[in-house]
Image (cartoon, rainbow, N blue to C red; front, top):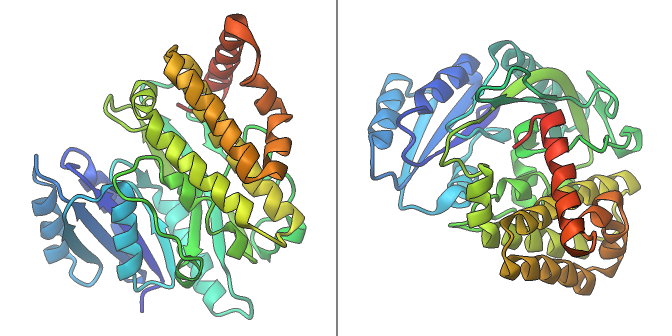
Length: 339
C-alpha cells in the first residue's frame, strides 16, 4: 500500500501536464500518481500519460475515461486510490520539492504514531502570471505547527485566509466514509473538497511549507473572471450544495462550524459579486434567489452570513451600492493577489 495517492485530472493538458508530473515524481515509491485522462480529444494528453506510466510503472497509473469533468475525474481517482492519504493536484499546477519531501516525512511519521491523522494542511502559492509579488496563503497565526492537534486548539482564520483544496491532504478512508462524490460536468467543485469532509475531521497537522503552486494566467482557465461569469450557474450550483451540506450538520465543534461558515461566506460572496459584475438583471435575480435559498434551507446559516461584513457588502442597495461592492472586491483582489 502506498503512503499517498495524488490524483491528477487531465483534460487536453498536453501543454503543461509534464511540469506537474515531473514535480510529483520527486515523491518516489511512497507516492502513487493517478493520472485521470478525462476524455481528452484535442491533443496528446493520453499519449503523454501512458508514456510516463510505462517509464515509472511502480509509481504512475493512468485511467482513461469518457469526459466527466473535474469532479468526475476526482471521483475516479478516489475510487481507485490505494494510498493511505489522498490529494488532488490539477494538471496546470505543480508542487515544491523541498516542501513535498517534508510533507511525506510527516505522513510517514504519523502512520507510525499513536494518533490517526485525518487532515494535513500546508501553504499554497498563487503563481499568478505577470505578478511581481506571489501571494502565499499561510496559517501560522491560526494553527499549531509540527504536531497533531484538534479543533480545540485551532484559532479563527483571518478574514483574508481560507482553506482551499490546494492546501489539504486527507486520509483516504475519511473521504470514503463521508461519502464525498463530486458532481460531474460542473466547474468549481474543488470548493466541495475543502468543505464536505470537514465534519468528519477530528485531527489535523499543519506544515508551514509552501507546497502547492497554484497557477493563474491561462485565458481559458476556470478561475478567469470572465469565464466564471459565463459559468455563473455552475458556481451557483456548487454554492447551493454547500448550503445544503451546512444545513445538515449537527453537533459540530464550535471551531469546526466556524471554519465551514467562513468558507461558505467567501464562496457566497464570490457568487454574489460575479452576479453583480455581470451587470445583467437576470444574474442580479440569481443572486437574490441564492440568498433566499439559504434563508429557507438553513435559517441559522443565513442569519450569520447575511449580517456579516461580507454579507452586508454584497447587499448594498441600488446601482451605487453595487458599484461600491465591486470596487471593494477589486481592492481586496489587488491586495491579496487572488483571481
